[in-house]
Amino acid sequence: MMTRCSLAGLSLFLLLFTLLAGGCQRSLVGEEADVSGTVFYKGKPLPGGHIKIASPKGHIVVAIIDPQGHYQCRAPVGEVQIAVENRMLKMKQSDQLPPPMPAGAPKPNEDSVHGTYVPLPEKYHAFETSGLQYKVKKGPQTYDIHLE
Image (cartoon, rainbow, N blue to C red; front, side):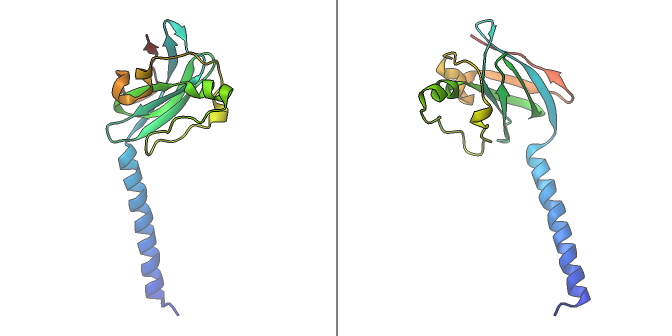
């Protein structure tokens, strides 16, 4: 049988644990901002796929590209790297398995990705080779992504 003192102590411990756990989660992600724009390939909107945005702390955000080339997401404030992927549109047509996502990356709902497959250079599929970087600022912003 728990005494009032031990019950109060347990309640206090749970409250502190919850606050600390929540604080740790926020510190990993940091501030975020609304980012939207259009992804262009060779001057035309890319008709589907998704973009992946990675912060230096390893936080990864995935945003769907709609058939008109538009995307929107909440991205971490600061310097980020960007990768663009649309091979799932080709794989949907051929029923192949999609390539693996990086460890810790949220997986987009492949059923929500619609559009027309357009072959992109391989370099855009990975953060390390895409050459796509952006500095996310506080507040809502528009950033168009141009692929060649």
